[in-house]
Length: 126
Image (cartoon, rainbow, N blue to C red; front, side):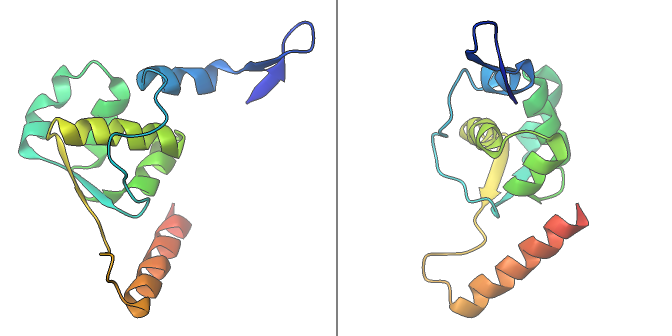
C-alpha cells in the first residue's frame, strides 16, 4: 500500500516495508523457484525451526511439514510472492527445505495443462 506523505511524496506502508526487511531488501532469490514448485521441510528444518530468527521462515517451515506450492505459501502467509521466493531460497541454501519442480523443460503440453488445472484448483481451495 502506498499513500502520500506530507508534501505529496509517495510513502511505502509499513505493512510492505517489513516483509522486505526480512529479506534485507532483496527482491530476487539466489535460485529461481517456480510458483508451482513444491516446498517441503527437511529433517534438519524440523530440528532448526525453533531457532530461526525470522518468524516468517519459521512459519514457512511449519507450513511445509507437508508439501506446499510456493504460491500457496505466499497466500497463506499473506506475503508478496517475491518475499516468499527469497525466504524459501534462503531456507533451501541452508538445506532446511527441499524444492521439487513439478515440470521439466521437456514436459509435454498435456503435463503442463494438467499442472495448470491443479494449480487453479488449489488456488480456488484457498
